[in-house]
Image (cartoon, rainbow, N blue to C red; front, side, top):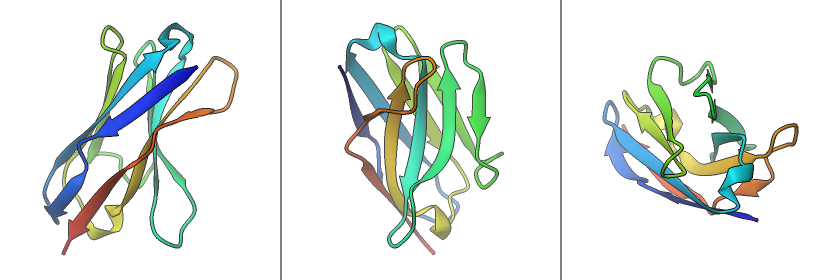
Length: 117
């Protein structure tokens, strides 16, 4: 099993920045990709960004150029640097991980990000 714990959420004004962290523990050697998803009230969970072991990254169009994902394999931690935040970025942000060839089946408890206008 893999456990994921997020941190770094909070309240920030529009245009500000936040850095989220997600620390993995347990059978971390089995992790292939780590990702961030978010869910706003009344909306479905959506993909934000992911990063593989080789640091190949993928971003949703809505965050390209503003968010940067990075991964420290030695610390089993993935980060999400969020710049130029907008009120529409307000959501609960969830860290996820998968094993090669599988869906994201490991999830953190979520951390709240609120962007005020």
